[in-house]
Length: 313
Ligand code: R5P
Image (cartoon, rainbow, N blue to C red; front, side, top):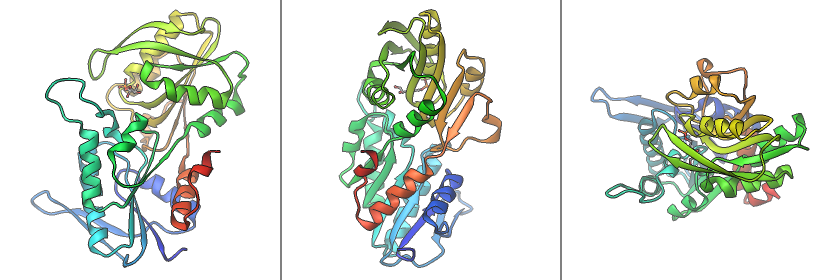
């Protein structure tokens, strides 16, 4: 297996790629990524990939457009170099948020990026906790859609008293995800009525479900600017929650997110390492769980033709 399987990384999260390869017991395969003097990107694979099963790891983190372009050129280079099968490993697919035409004259860019990934040469996609499950359908190639719900649930189960806990969805769109989380935790759930006012601001209203006097765990796919999370924390405090914790898969943590979280009345925030968190964004109340073992196992199973779904039963 070791020679037939090759794992490459773009520049978005090389730390995660290294951890995944450590679990697989193989080195990250060498690639040169650079830039021509006219600002065009340049990629050269530094070893033979002919007839190999190739995986390219690149979450869509800031600078998102640079990282997407880098992935596309890497995929194209793999195809030109006669790789047998190419899997784009995208732990965080940021454009999943652009999944519908909810305003006139806009693009469903999540679909456009899926088309580009396929055109560039990907034969498969491996990703995690898409903003909406149906984004999976934007791809005409097989997609393995992993989830960090068991990883985050295990963290709370191990360190907290669950007897008074309630899982909270920040809006109706997240209710299904939180339903799965609350089932794993074996606790009830509540939903908050949310309206997005702008990219960085949200407005919340009624709480559906019992939160008064309870330990609330907000569960989210991502924390971007932190606007949704902080509004939810405030709503729960006003509704009389005893304590508030949060779990989110993707720590995008852009713009004012860290300052907002630092000030917020939340006791702990648990995320995963799909997106790299630089040192200056670390907070005492922020815990980062590694999903590298899960990605490594999925890559191994895709390579050997075993079930990936069985990982979650
Ligand atoms: C929205 O529907 C998502 O589930 C997240 O709540 C949202 O992406 C978080 O964005 P922000 O942190 O900027 O409010």
